[in-house]
Length: 289
Image (cartoon, rainbow, N blue to C red):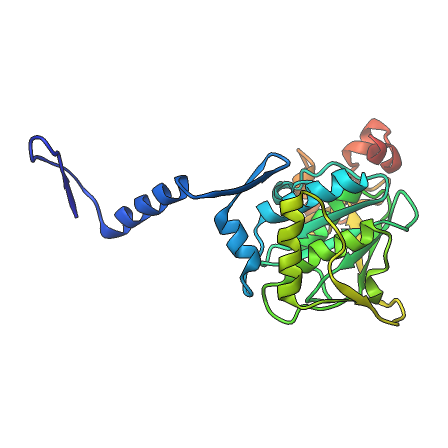
């Protein structure tokens, strides 16, 4: 499609139909009806429609609004902006907390250390669909805990599961609300998806989270354990090329050391010290910093 100057009739630019459609879509978004503004986050009518739609997958804006309400209402630690997980820039948690995470695969999960010894080297995971952790979820857990131990035990709790492919965010918020209220999520059977969606809309309209409609079922607390191996100064999982320090025996990511001699990779008996041992800093001291 060609666009012409209205006065002279001269051709200005050749625009494809796809580009024109995109421009129109962006203009429509700029004029989209506002719905609610909560905790500084603007929600639009599309967010409302996303919540009430049976197949609506909840966006990060919706998740973060729910987290903000829960954090203020229950004075619970955690509930950091989910976008911080993209570059693992969460604040480190040294006390009980609750957090909703994006697992990197179009799925939301809730994690918590409530009721566990602190500082935690164990964490409860409430997942409405899977019983395994993605590498991205493991990375985020390690970033939040920054554990001085060599292993973090993730307990994937047996909880109410979603019956479709879109309710993960809804249930993640419901789990978090129940945890903040002191309830045992493993004994809760939540109501139908549409009842829960209507409840979330009401919570947002009232700017106050309340327990989602549910019933208590007699069930023993059970879970599947997933061990997350933690190494290096960064206290993150094993990945990529690694080298072991000759003194502290800690495995170090190649990317976490600025200069590693080439001989360290080729000579089996080569003696190499990590930057912590060179400075005389222990792993525990490094984590405390």
